[in-house]
Image (cartoon, rainbow, N blue to C red; front, top):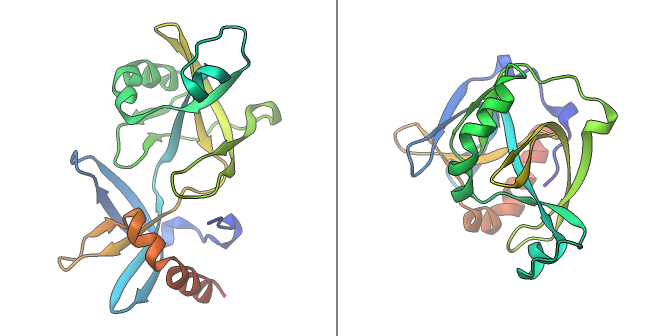
Length: 198
């Protein structure tokens, strides 16, 4: 679902909740909208800090079928969570040169600091394939590149706000809505969302 950034008010006006993942990592978020669906309170959240995506350059053949052909064109591929652990120190060092402090937060990497001004050549579009969903084209701002064990990595931030759906628990905290539940309630959540945005 695509959200229009112009509909997002100044985040300082909103309370903050913290999402926690299975590894006990945390992600502080502004509560942008609240919606009641079938007696439950759902929240539309915007991370407080800058979301960071990590991509690696791979040959097109290698990315598709594991065939390593050095003559093939290279494409950007999303880095798996397990690989993040190996490259995290290098990624943090590179972003530190931009006065950005990389954090291993829940559900997404984030960086604390001011976003560098973007040049047109630093922005690009990438088709993202998500399991169970149609491919989507997302726009990113390239922040930095670095090499690790012979591979080239790119550190980017999405141009459009990265939003999360969460729901309020009995103790007042918030938990991320799992993909299966989101798909089951998607039409209700989207209807409620557009109602509060009108």
